[in-house]
Amino acid sequence: MIDVHCHILPGLDDGPKLLKETIAMAKAAADDGIDTIIATPHHNNGRYINERSDILGATDFVNGQLQRMKIPVDILPGQEVHMYDDMVNDLERGLILPLNQSTKYILIDLPPNHIPPFAPRLLFDLQIAGYIPIIAHPEKNAVVAGNPDAMYNMVSNGAIVQIDAASITGRNGKKVRKLTRQMLSANMVHVIASNAHGAKGFHLTKAYNSLDTSTKDILLENSEELINDRPIAKDEPLRIAKRGLRQFFK
Image (tube, rainbow, N blue to C red):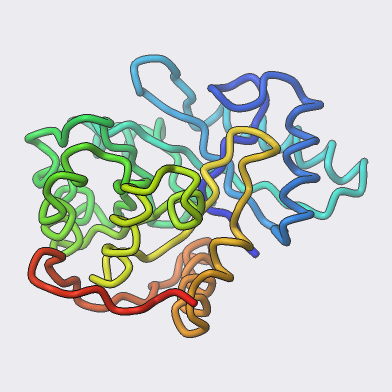
């Protein structure tokens, strides 16, 4: 199983501070059935700056430690980039790191309480530059919670969506769980990830097992396609407010 969004590198952001905590996370991930993790430290979110070269070095170091300890998890480099206006230029300058370093997929974090007015133009410009924006856990964004059409518009215009496993299982709250189910029903979920910041943050197996077999298989395959820089499966999104809830859960 592949986890495409995880804060596992030590000392870079609000994930583990020490290597032993990273090791504990890797062991917990393996216990949950995860064999591949894209490390996605926060970048340019007002608190953390983690540029490409620093992440690549940290990823190599952690992989060496995991191999030495025979922990069967492979770490790939990535970045969770806080949405900002000049992302395309910084991609061209090599400061932003796509998922698995050389793919076209860029993981983008929305501000928690709003969607910047420049978001539609930025998402368009990224795609014109050859990248595919992945919106990280929008089910926790206050604007999306109040107006799911905000996410419908982004997906309709080419963005893809990653939701947190904890949002499916209910660990992020009942309201978030309900919205997540609605987004699944409306074809606005393309990838599931842990977004883990510690050893107790992995719930991927439980989240996948709560889905029907067809949906589970598609989302599992999408994560594999993503790390290999191949197109993922996407259906046309639907407006949540105008539609009942199909069953995607057991």
